[in-house]
Amino acid sequence: MKRILFFSLILPTLLHAQVSPQEADVISFFETAGARVSKDDEGHAVKLFSGGKPPHSVEQLQQIEDLTRLEQIALNSPQAGNDEWGFLKKLPELDVLTIWHCKTIQSLKPFSDLAIESLTVGGCMGLRDLNKEAPEQQRDAVLTLHSLPNLKSVNLYHSPTVSTDAHLQHLAKEFPQLIDVKIDVAAPRGFETEISPEGLAVFQKLPIEVLSIENAVTFAKEHIAALAGIETLEAVLFDFRRRDFDATPLVEEMKRLRPEVEVVVAEEGASGPPRRAQK
View 1: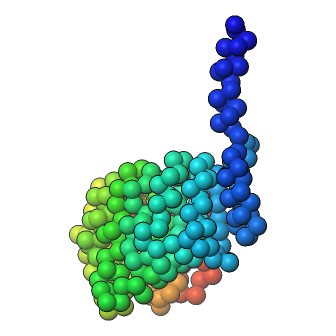
View 2 (view 1 turned 90 degrees about the vertical axis):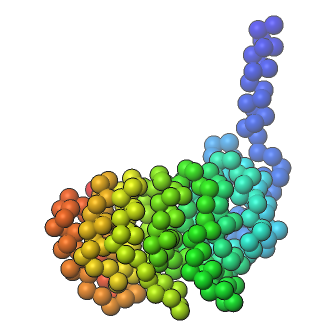
């Protein structure tokens, strides 16, 4: 009887550990297509990185729902449109989501309602090209991102951008657990950056430790004072690679107000983004 009970206890575990034929087929497909797939000790896919060459069709992307152990996904140039991302909600372990250069979405709504802790969306020019008749929808794309209760890290750049006080207020209200924030404050063509020191001060409500800001050419010392009010701040990174801008006054002001905070600047022509010093 004890032997029967023992096997009855371990059998579900053994069955759960097995990679299903569907999962094996999907892993094989993406690996053959040039994607990088990392697997756990049981052979389940836990990380998927696709460089987008060749690009995957919607049907091919939707196969990802069979990789139910996925913890991280990075997709370059995915072809899925606004209503074709439902497979993400079928991945209970998904923690990190990265989307680059998507030309087929008009908003960030497809990446809402997930349990992820980290989100990167960058260079998604569909936000521009598919909203030509309503350019304010490109400007306000960040307002369509919501219901990510576990989000601690967010990286939004080039498209979408964060260029108004309303955008900052939305991030602070929707994602109160943010620790790592990277934003591009350059307004889309036809608009101007409208971020005030008072708008930046909303970040003082968040537990932000690392703040990276790209294209902050409209910032003055008053903006820096608002950033210095973030009590948890450990590092602020300024990215001016695409702009000719003298950041010296901003850097000096931050060091004066918060000398313990690490300040890193990538100037025009720098080979890469600003990075914290290795410790």
